[in-house]
Amino acid sequence: MIIALDIGLKRIGVAICPDKKTILPSTAILRKNRNQAARDTSQMLKEKNASTLVVGVPLGGASEDEMRRRIEHFCSLLDTDLKPVFVDESFSSVDANKLLADGYSKSRDGKLDSLSACEILRRYLCLKSI
Image (cartoon, rainbow, N blue to C red; front, side):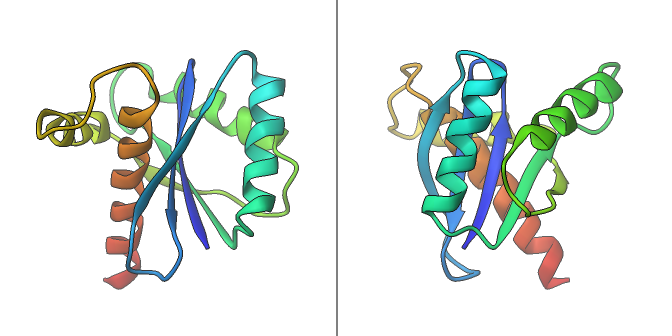
């Protein structure tokens, strides 16, 4: 199972790919603090029997280095042997918002975050097929 994460300050979006073709949003992880979020994420990775971990990082922009450092630090807190594969997440939220405009709820329940993770996972699968 391939798992993709969109790591944010309030929520961590989660997407899963059980068969290297189908991409599904999963329940976002609420982030109270980084240690709790790392524990919850690690538990989810084990429960879903993750074989690959894809993590979005923003490329370009003034805060690229700072955001990469924060995301890499969070990944280092995870209790897993999986080495994260980093994929450009630039504008993944914009793409996810288009889906929200097409009927999804706009509440802050983590759907947007998990749809962003779906876009990150889609980009990863496209790169793998090239």
